Structure formats: C-alpha cells, structure tokens
Image 1: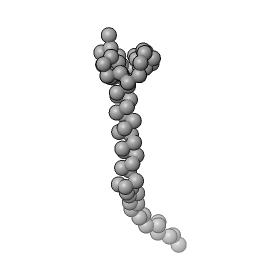
Image 2 (image 1 turned 90 degrees about the vertical axis):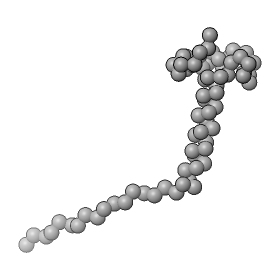
Image 3 (image 1 turned 45 degrees about the vertical axis):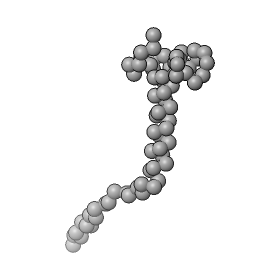
Image 4 (image 1 turned 180 degrees about the vertical axis):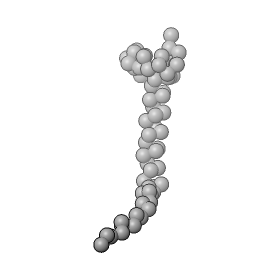
Length: 70
C-alpha cells in the first residue's frame, strides 16, 4: 500500500510593518547625505572644518564619483 505525497501549502512572504522600516530609512538617508556632503562639498567656502584633512581623506572618492576638486 502506497501513501499519497503530502499536500504542499503555499508559503506567504513575511510582512514587514512600515513603522519598523521608517526609522532605518531615515537613518540611512541622513548617513547618505552626510557622506555625499563630505565627499562632494567639504572644501572651500562650504567647509565646516578647517584644514585639508577631510579633503585629503576623501580625495580619491571625489574623483571616483566625478566631483571636481582641483
């Protein structure tokens, strides 16, 4: 006597509440904007920090992303 194979049940994707995503999305946006600022604009008239340290630290990233710096 053979048994029938077990019936397959469709699995539903896990639901992620928007309220749990919003704080992380805002955090990622703020960090992204800070990174873009420091790589692209932290130099010259818009500089928040004196000296050349941040410019030199992000110099290669500037060229990689297409920001002019010289």
